[in-house]
Length: 447
Image 1 (cartoon, rainbow, N blue to C red):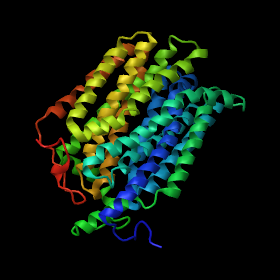
Image 2 (cartoon, rainbow, N blue to C red; image 1 turned 60 degrees about the horizontal axis):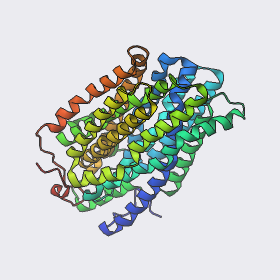
Image 3 (cartoon, one colour; image 1 turned 45 degrees about the vertical axis):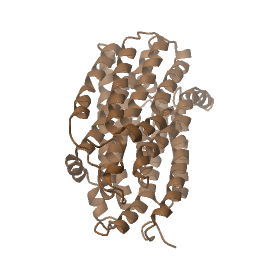
Image 4 (cartoon, rainbow, N blue to C red; image 1 turned 120 degrees about the vertical axis):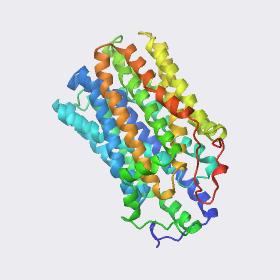
């Protein structure tokens, strides 16, 4: 029986059913993984504040972001050498180990163990983020934005409900003898294991390896990299940076993803703490669940529309639209005071702005580099995005303790200004010929 690495190159007609199966499977695992990630995020700051103190709550949240960023490097190396399936499975399993360690840290009140657990918990986030790139490996150029956005959207189903499940998980596990807020992470660990099992069993044939075989068949001068050879070398961060540096479109794609994520994390991570200032312990989990559900709905629920606009209008206009929404979100949230409904509106706008920069930026990045270079460049993107978010999460705790939440939103708004300048820069966006399709078939990017 042929394996993913040795199977003959598929024809263009063979790719369509493979792509449909891949996207359907990713929709399922994004729902499962989204539940796992979001349950942890919804209580992470509150749990860290109780175990480590308010000043370190932001650092604990940033540990999860740093973990996702750092894990992007080995995960994309695995993908470059062996395909998407082993990389995604590894990331989810690491995330499940992190969830278990957070539970143990809460039981024994260990700050170092809490930080280690949060670091590894980022594996679930790393898997969810890399799944969006898996969706475009075999996608038609004119549908890349929509295919990517469908996978982003799938997270909505699990993620919107997950913060509200946190209270149920907490109440259930307290009956088992676990401390307050530890239970949601136990549920997260179980969700990650389930997502890993589904991918290990069903993500066949591997979409990235299939795309490489197809590219090699259509362009013989670009052979399929041998496992551990050229693919591994191209997955290195230095080589990935060189690839990005040579392509203005790829630079804009990474900047959009990273800066949109920075602003979102900075404001979102401290919003539960802000809500905790005006709500009792009995009510805060319920209120946080509602507000974060609206925020996550903004991030994911309209992503198919964002993807359609990305394909229809072009990548740059949608990136700029996302920036405008991020600025509006900072203005609304920063002036909301302790008015929870207005703060909810700000968080919903924040999520929608993130969706614009994430979907359009990720699509632009993926189509701007050759197939063989994609894993490394995509890993670099997630690394930069994660480090930007980690820095924002870490700084947000100190800003929250000092000047406060309004100042935090002002600083977040200022941080997005350089992205506006880059997106408006009159530079050509050249999309390489990929899988037999000329660059001018991608709408909205001719200048």
